[in-house]
Structures are given as structure tokens and as C-alpha cells.
Length: 415
Ligand code: GLU
Image (cartoon, rainbow, N blue to C red; front, side, top):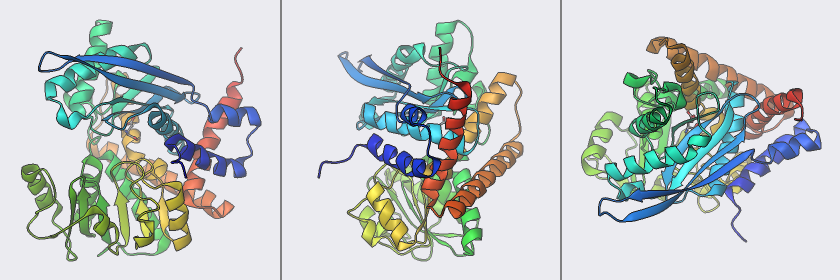
């Protein structure tokens, strides 16, 4: 069977939601189609003096509800299909948590792990210049995603500001605090994910104390989620990164694992644990599994071995549609990424508001506002899921798509 494209998978979920929404055909077609897609060629002078060309993208999927919003990823597997799919998911995500943004995504097909910091800087500056015709604080606001970080956002902000001739902090979010970044942005995706899991635990009457957790991916999202769960008294029994996994049924000390990873460049070999392959960790029984790496990590090849009660998506679409159906049939409570990992873009919204106002909030204010938004979004999605008798992914897509469709319809067709 030919492999289904990621964007087709996203459209399949949209179709499931539309079975309940019954949108007018023209609106449905609008939402199945990206609004704007830009492909750019990014020449970069490498450290050895040779010039290499990388392909970059920025897709603005829809901006009926406000400026387009979404991260930038640097990864060898970046393609127009992937970026379009992620831009669509950003559109629903911003609407699920009801922040006034449309959805976008960008990326460059490159291998940042084999590039120097200087090469990444030159790549970032030229890519920013090339997509400069689309981005801006009123039109489209990038943020970090896979293999992009605060420093990359600082270079993007600087490049855009140099093009304008004055500083424009609101053009990107997830930048360092000293140039207009927000407190709490770094851990926001994970903090939001934990809030939705705590709501799910209440709903399912599962206690937090001693909750066994496995986390697949030990980047910013995976590490912070593991740390918050550990600090709350849950037992993080296994974590994985791209090189392998570790397991300790008594629970891992996440800070110590992070120290080990800093030195060894992998979680593997951490002394109070057993080394496993990522696939072996996926087979370990737990109460909560958090896939926080790339899309498609949970698929037909491993879903049968999963023994968890809750699965919360830290990554965007880490579960293929086939695996999703299998999880639902097994009775796993799946928290989809458009809800579970929306905390990042929520605090991006706070950052943008603070930048536009030139007035900054303290961290407890940010944490409290994030918590309120995430709890409300969870309860709204849960209510839809109960009302329609559907799973949480379909319910979240209904919640998001309904808001986007409403905005498209009330604005009407131009001209
Ligand atoms: N890359 C993150 C996401 O997928 C954050 C996007 C943003 O803050 O704009 O949700």
C-alpha cells in the first residue's frame, strides 16, 4: 500500500470532524486548501567556502481569525507536504485554545546536526530574508519548532529588524527574554500538556501519585514534561531520545538524566537505569505515554504492543491514523496534539501581546493565564466528545474547525 502523505492524514481527520459539522461545501473546500504556500531557495556559504542551496518553505494555511502563527523547523525530512500538514494543524490548534491567530508553518530541509552554528546563522538569516515578504507582527509570526531555538529566533528577529531599519520584537515568538521574549515560554508546551493530563486524570479518576510515565523524545518538550511530572510526584519510568531509551521501574531522576545527556549526548548509559531500544520502551506498561519527538512515531508496526491508559501528544501528530484507531479500540484515552501541545503557542500569543504593548508580565501571571486557557480548552473538547460520542481528536478538530469556519463565513467571500 503506498504510504499516505502527512497532509492527507490531516485531511482525513478534518473529514471525520466534518461528518459532525456538515460545513457548506465551499467552506469545507476552503479549509481543505492552504491559503498561501511559498517555496524559497536558500543559498548558504558553508564554512569550507562552498555555497550550498537548501529548499525552504512557509505555508500560511488560513488567517481568517488573525495573523498566521506557527513554528519553523530545520530537519532533513522537511517537505512542502509536511509543512502544509503542520500549518493546517496550527490553524485548528490556535482555534481550539481560542487565541486570535490563523495557522502557518515553515521549515528548511537541512541537517542542522551536521552544520556549524555559523552555518545555521547564515541559513537562518537568508531564509528569513526570503520569507520576509510574508512575515511580520501583523501578518505572520514564526516561532521555534524541531531543531530551532531561542537563538534562531533572535537571528530571525534581527534580520527582519535590519530589513525594516528598527527593532520589531513582535515578528517572532520564543526569542530570548532580553529582546522581548516572554517568561515561561521555554516550558510552556510541556506545562500546558501537564495541565491537560491532570484534567484527564480527574475525568478518568486516576490518581497522580505514583502515575507511571514514559516520555519518547528528550528535547525541550519531552525533557520539560518529564521534569514537571517527576516534580509533581509521578514516576517517570522511561525516557527515549533519537539514540535509544532508558528504563527504571522505580522512576528516573530527570534532572540527573538531563545532566548525563549533556555530557554523553544521549540518555543511554545513565547509571541508575537499563538501556532499551526505543521500541522496547514503547512496549513497557505505563499509565501515561508522552510521544514528544517527530510525527508518525506510533504506527502500525508498534501500536499493538502499547500498554498505556493515556497517551498525550507532545509532538505534532506522532500517531498515524491507523495507530490512532487501534489505540481508541484498545480504550486508550488519546489527548491530541492540537489540544495537548497548544501551551507553546498560547504563551507565544502572550509574548506577542507583551511585545505589541511594550509591557511585560511576571511569570506567575503567565503560568496562571496558561493554566486557565488549557483547562477551558480541555473541558470544551471533552464536552464535545461526550456530546457527539466521538474520540478526543475528532472532538478537538470539531472545536477548532468550527471556530475557523465561523470566521470564514462571517467575513464572507472577497470581492
Ligand atoms: N512550534 C510550536 C507548535 O507546533 C509553537 C508554535 C508557535 O508558538 O507559534 O505548536
